[in-house]
Image (cartoon, rainbow, N blue to C red):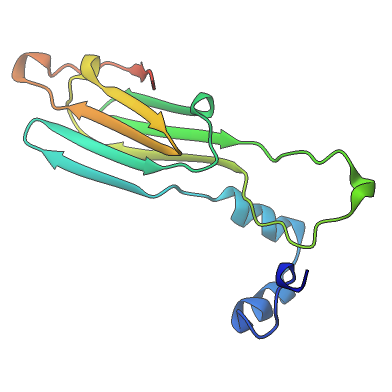
Length: 144
């Protein structure tokens, strides 16, 4: 039980910081400003993107390409605890909220963009456009 409670000795400075700002507004701002980490690699004829989105389901992540930008957005709702009389939280750190990230990729072949989602990781293959394919059109990308 003692390990569940935050120690004053551990994380000395964060404890001081948190104690002065423990408000719902403060917590909500930082919980909702989650930006997933991403790696983007440029290969000769395409881009490879890997984005960590732990805790998000495939159904709650959307990828779109429009006007040279690849946009990834996701939403994760707070789980609702219904049994209030069984106790109370002494620590609640799992985040919820939404994110939206945009990446300029220029002219690409939007008909061949592919994506997969597994174990909290979104992976996209984004082919660069050839000369005859350089017409930017909006498209929503299906994630498998």
